[in-house]
Length: 246
Image (cartoon, rainbow, N blue to C red; front, side):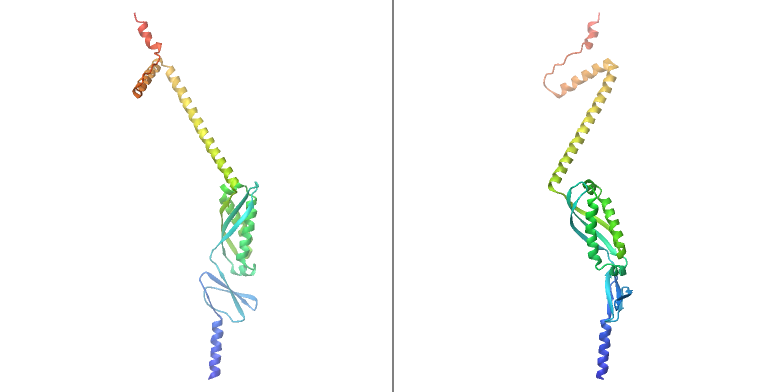
């Protein structure tokens, strides 16, 4: 009786030693005596204890922060840039066999690629064409991580830390640009006003009486707005009918 209990206990212990449970987002890579044998799907799984070894791999998208990197741009400006990388494992076997630690390897590759790509870009391009740089970073990382069974879906440059002297220079440049636009707009307004006056003078010159009526209308407007006494010279054209009258 006792030997049967011992054997039953050993069998139960042996059975529970091989029990594994995989979540829906996980896959299990089985190594049997050091050689890869199978990949397990989610759910209840059993492996041979002491012979099989299961390595769990998550297939969820990983959001990895790239630490701030010191970068010298193509136009010799020193900036500090950080980014975030979105990737996921597409082939669990490659992620285990082709690289020792795919998370660490992807992080290091992201840092070196970020420095390399931004070093080939000018500061204006980095600030105004960030989407283009993000796509270029994602394409390069995806190409290098594909042999590891990893798909890089997106890379986003989060923050660009500029030196203080560069920030002040850009502020002065922006202020000068605003002043230039204001002067251009004012000059365009003056040009349009002069063109309108030129057109109006051409119309009035065709009819002298219209000019005299405009003169009188101006006198009426000024008199209604101010209480002071204003002396205007009287055009001689208005007196001609009286002087020439018999």
